Amino acid sequence: MRIIIVGCGKVGDTLCRQLVSEGHDIVVIDSDSQKVSALVDAYDVMGISGNGASSDIQHEAGIANADLLIACTPGDELNIICCAIAKKLGAKETIARVRKPEYYNLFMSSELGLSLMVNPEYEAAKEIYRILNFPGVSKVEEFAEGKLELVEYRIPAKSELLGLALKDFRAKYANNVLVCAAQRDDDALIPGGEFVFEEGDKVHFAGSPKDVQAFFKTLGASRGRYKKVMLLGGGKIAFYLAKELSEDIPYIKIIEKDINVCRELEDALENVEVVNADGFDQDILEDEGIENADAVAALGEEDEKNIIISMYAASKKKKVIASIRKDSYITMLEKMGIDSAISSENLTANHIIRYVRALKNHDGGDVRTLIRIDNNKAEVLEFSVNETFEGKNIALKELPLRKKVLIAGIVRGNDALIPDGSSHIEAGDSVIVVTSLKGVDDLNDILS
Image (cartoon, rainbow, N blue to C red; front, side):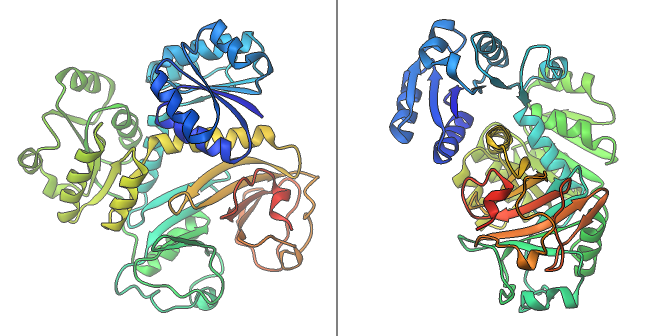
């Protein structure tokens, strides 16, 4: 596919790297010539310096023959205009990154001709919301409209899982929860029966929400919902998150040093305490009651401050979630035992790449959900199965699956099934696949 990316920031860089690796023909546009040159040199793509909303610049990029234009500059207005012009000039599909709540709500419809709108801060808020609603785990991802969950959990010292071989897991616990991926040190694994749980392993479990909750209760790793949550930084992530949490959590406090932002939050949010102070000051945190908080989310604009305050909150034995932009920092935090680090840029890129794969797909089944796990070394994909899938109605034990592929779940109607060798896939199912293979964009790709 021929794809034009307007905006060479973090999201544009991530998209460019991933889409080039999947064989797409990429053109990047940015008014900053140095950013354009950096991507051209790094990924061997075509680059144009200029205003992405200019029809002349878009013509130079070949917009009339483009399958997709992605506008991911820092400006919502520019992104929307870029897409509107691209559509008029012949682009088949357009995607805009839109961050402002008022724009995102106003333009949810297709009146502007947009194929997709992506809101990075809203995506991050949803991710944090899921984590805060499942104490004891690092991350929670939903598939098939919430019928199946993928939960990330780091094996602690003294866990009853330690020393247990995977082949004995189901007999000891349950047949309705599946171990579908693991990260040990820097290695991403699709574990087999001989895999043995070790302290520090980051393991992904799949099952229905009810079954997963019951399993973690058995492990003693789950407790009641958090009741007091402290959000440090009053940006867009905090706004979206507080709005979601206010329906479930009785006490939410946002600490923000910009008085104007505080006033906006107070006007927009109900049942949320907003404090005008520097949430990244240790003394202020003590005064504002960090000792009484169940969970702390560091949502400031600077990664370094979020990291430092996360380490401090972790020393207080609080559940900690940090908003981090640099992938290397996320890895560093994980090595320090802080697993819940969220990158809004990565979430946005994943959302867009899922859409690109669905556009490219013509056989087997469309990609509905795409999640990257284990430091982006593996993917979890949800496919909707159609009649052209070559493996339908065949028992999984007889299905010629490629290596490094695992069927983690089958959703049929309202039922989430954890498959075994006798299970089969039918047209109309949703199938969850875990793989460390690259560029899987069709369900038939999992077959050898």
